[in-house]
Length: 227
Image 1: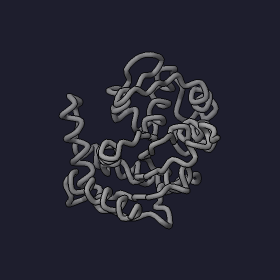
Image 2: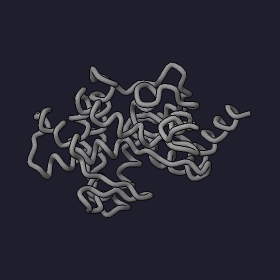
Image 3: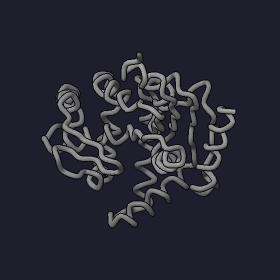
């Protein structure tokens, strides 16, 4: 008789990695819904850590302080909602200041280790779609399908600007473009778990694709693997 841990280890995983605002989260949720899988928004865990650290007055350069926050992170996920210390934090973690803080702390090895098992615990039957930056390289290296989703930085900045405005958050395209280029540099150049496609990942450029076309492409790749 298999244990829950063993069952989880056998559950199929689709990883969707890529730079900020490449559409990973939206695609992951839609693919998961189509397949009846659960979703892991790994970036949310780093943003929740960043939000909690900011609220505690911890400087992003204080690695030990940030890691302590992550180790005691009081978070709960319920469908599309996420709660920090019992309070819905879905809107707060999407603030650009929180995203920049998360990007600054994401390279800390001890922080990544603190959040690793928490991420792997999402792997449960019938399957998981995990989006992030190192899902296919570090967290789920044995994933059944690995997607590396890219889009040119201008397209990504425009998407993020539109998303923020639709959510009632003020946004400036020029500032977003500058921040995104800086974030890309940090993510790709960090020493620990840098943003990079796994050797066996399928690169998918969504610059000129609609959300529906991108989702269809991922589902086609998944079904081809199952044939």
